[in-house]
Image (tube, rainbow, N blue to C red; front, side, top):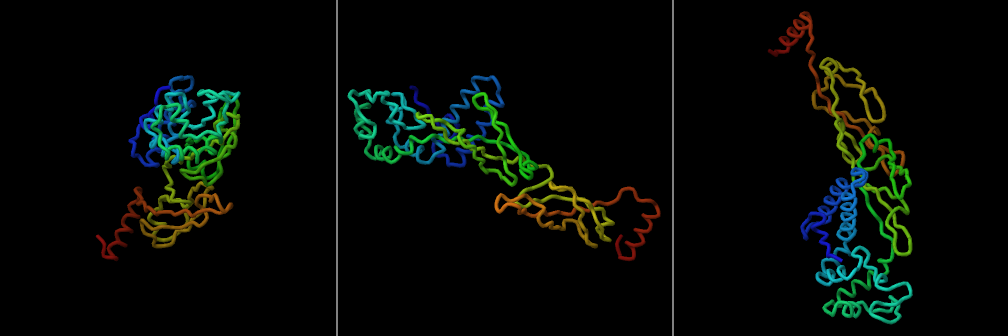
Length: 309
């Protein structure tokens, strides 16, 4: 089995932090996802390689072992070991006959001796200790992550996505209020282990930029245009929001750049249910461009009385 450099697969340096690894994985996963490259076998294989690399580098303990074992890990891979699971049961056939000969149980083996037997020594006892501590975790089915991009409006109202797996379509509900980085759990749709048990699939949410609103946690911010006369004299304007149109009272003498807070008109909160953030409106005053001559003269008189112009 050819040794796989997972850092090279994800295109990151060996000293990359968790955020850099996750960012690289999400970018590549979107690029080579089967739904984006339907019928492209090369893209499908690349997608599998990317997920395999992230399964190791995205897990702190697995990455630590991957980095620590060095050449021993390479020999483990080249000898046929599955780098994602570290499941030593795969070295034995169903009857319990070990490759090294004799009937053995995997739980009876000393992993340091096992490496020495297979690889001719050189494996550290510290590395063997890591394997002992992780042995119980290795048999668990693996969870998978898949990035999903939704609009801000979908995040406000909640939405669904249809996933295809093994010829079956699965509808997944994405709750209102999710943020970039939120994870939606789909039980039993992850990878299967040797026992046929399945882990879970997590949809990792990313909210696409919105042309109107800026989101800050559960609050929303946007600009509204108010004509100069309404700003000077006061009045009402209709403002579209993600939850529907609302009528907003503009106080007399409102200046450009003023902020108006609409309580409870922001994003729904994931917890507690039923609560919302606030919506902040930034007033942008617009000047009329179609004044009549009489209106222009009246404004000029007013300006002169105030010492303007």
